[in-house]
Image (cartoon, rainbow, N blue to C red):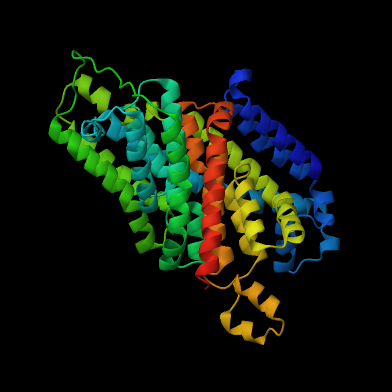
Length: 474
């Protein structure tokens, strides 16, 4: 069952990649493997656990002071159903409710023509100039918000600026690259950097100072290439003169301010309360929802039907939510059963170099969600106390262990690689999945048009970090 789980995951992944040729929505295979992997896991639990392949089971047995040899199939199934599924469902739910809240806030702002306040000020139709403006804006926004929220906002904005489908796919894909690059150098810009920041592996000022330049290069290299290749103008969506206007200029500005403020409030909420970000997102949504109810209370039935949040919710991309649920559930099963731990151990044994290990994790994060990969690395390599280094007699070992102190090279480079490596494939990051769902971007199209650009940017940024580490030794 251990090997069969990997086979089923790869087959499901292939079905997602071939969504358009198969004419099957990607949410279907995602949900299917998200369920089937747990079925295979629980049926093969006895063999997997007795072979010592599941790190989560081994930890549980040790923590509960249980005798591994005396554990029966009932205890194992109870562990999977009442411990692992509940644990992972909590993590998955945080992401899904965060995504649902962010998408709803963006949709409310959009339906109230809030983004028109911004798009009316972006006059250019030159493809390259517009690409640079949106990419730079995305890069810095994702450091303040996070890459997922920023992508949702920017793709919604993009719909007001570009009408042609494939051109919009291209812009949305470049926004994903910029969002992931911008999230990698900020402690609140990506789920993985948040994990490393909260875990104590990195500190705020250090990761900003040492990862911002490699991240910037990761975005700029693809942009420079596109500047040399892509020319011409974009076609803006045609605005009908007779199209009814449901909001006033004041209401449009108010909803834009409320929407952006609500999203910006989330990292502040998390810092102050230490509660999960999704709760801050839902609080922001509730405030915006209340304002819209009061704002349209005395208006006509037609306007209320158009602008009430209950009706706007129908426009939210629920297939994207289900796709997220399926993929994250499938990866959680692989993490719990131990396939990802085996992979991490193999990398450690066969590469043995921190740069190569981090680069490999970044490449893998294009296929497997970067969260369990980073979580696995955090579990495999504990933070080294700088005071203990002096007790190590071997200079080479002392230098190697020094990579794992707080703000050590391994952790910073891991933040960069895990944050930007996911851009190589469209479903390799939360930002990519969101853009894919919102714009129905084809997996194969992305591979042909964007993956090589993302890989070049990823390797260029990694090279900058390596050179930076050699000349600025810390």
